[in-house]
Image 1 (cartoon, rainbow, N blue to C red):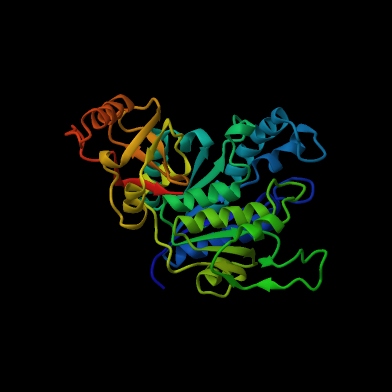
Image 2 (cartoon, rainbow, N blue to C red):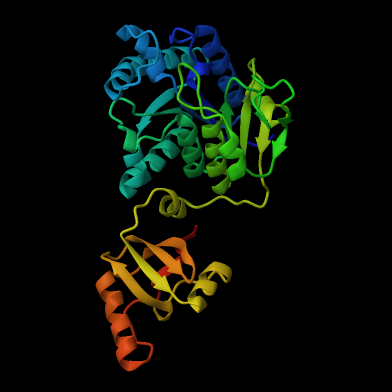
Length: 365
């Protein structure tokens, strides 16, 4: 098997016992499986939950805290415990981990996003296992990923992973809840995640986690949009992750060969940027950028809304509403002047910029 880049997501329920403490047996099983991947020559990125779950018992909570301050305090204790344990366990296999704590702001800020990508790539090139978690000690609701399922999908995109493996306590996706419906049918493989599947999924997580099958489906859909195939399931033993790569995993494979990897620039524009304005294009321009792979030219723009500068991201609206987002090559003032000249002289003005949005800085929604 050729060398692959694998993102493995392990949730709280897969790391801890019912009391919220780190379960040594579960953790040992995961560590041995990760070590086996490395032994086979694959690169590994671990997205690990468990900080809050590992810490809340030390604070005297009987269950996972629901307040922000409670979760942050639990994470402050649990993150240290979690990383210390990973260090000790991986050292037994002569493997070195590195911790990265990320928030939504690290993705929405272009420079921080690039730095996260560069750091992760450097660690992989040095043979280190990046262990990524949300920075629960400082995150607030409006800045969180909601769960580490989505974080794992976003990470799998920016490292251009060959596979995202989401480990959970259910062996894949079913057309019903197998815990309450014995006749529920399991999907061994899927080519897409539909909105109907997401709407019908159980959103409730375990007592020590935040996610449920709904969050995993949302993560899978995001990863697929970035060209990353996904596996959702369970397993036991040192070969469980290798088995997944070989097609024998106990779960559901979600893959579509027609989907291709998305470059880092387009990922940021599509998923993390905050548009600063809106431009409106005519039907000819809409068809050119949607169906012919063309850049957006000044002649196709007929209206500008908002204030933006060169390099900002703007929304693009066509004849029937929003069609995409793109990195603008001029300021709103420059573009408005072009439109004024077009109206005044009824001709295409000669402008200082060739394209309004280059095709490499454009993403369709």
